[in-house]
Length: 125
Picture (tube, rainbow, N blue to C red):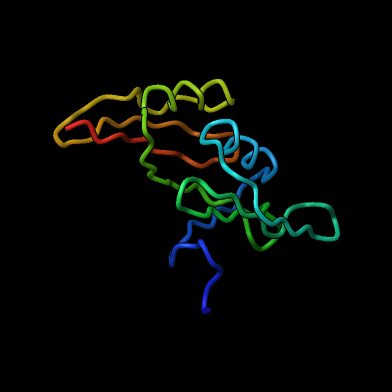
């Protein structure tokens, strides 16, 4: 097999300021399942993975030569309002309260402590 079983062909890879905090945010907000985690000699995360529904998100701590990158990730969830509230309780800050605009999605956004903006959406019509 040319990729791990259960992995999609494309995965977001986030370089963040605190990978452990980002992983915990994913668990609290999306019920993510932590997968593998490889540490560097200084104890920081070189590579970690968490599964959210059918997608594996890859994460590493920023380091010299690999700075934090502000990223945006769009994710469909069963209930955008409930997930938005869970994200706020997990320490995220609001970017946009969930609202339905000109398409079938009700969408909102939050930014986690690692610098990633998560666009949450539920298709409502």
